[in-house]
Amino acid sequence: MNWLHKLRLRAFGVVVASILGALAVVGWLSVPVLPALGVAIVTAAAVVNTMANRLAMPTCAGCGTDLAKTPAGTHGVICHECGTINQHFDESRLARIADRLNDRRDA
Image (cartoon, rainbow, N blue to C red; front, side):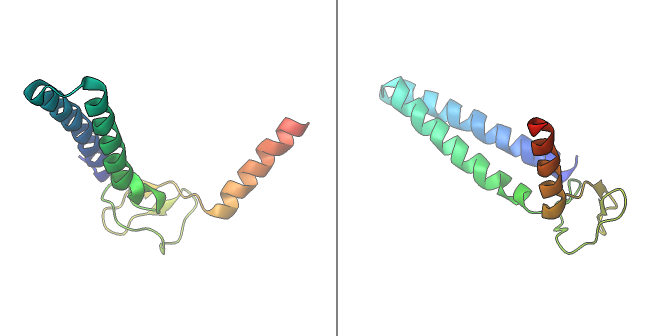
């Protein structure tokens, strides 16, 4: 199981655990359902956001190694730890893609 699948599984576990915890609190303390579920959803969203924050940086999808300083080849960045080929998106390439899309919309 690679790093990205582990991250998704952890996020799913956090969401399920927070919903089950909210339902347990509702049943145990007779708390109204909507506030308890609201707190559970906000907590799950915050935890998933912090877990997925590492995806904003260029990391290897296979092992989670930082690829910020690794040069990109023709087919992407090759992780020096596990050998996984990762898609490389630098800011200039994304800007060119956005410019092309805007030009197509204008035409």
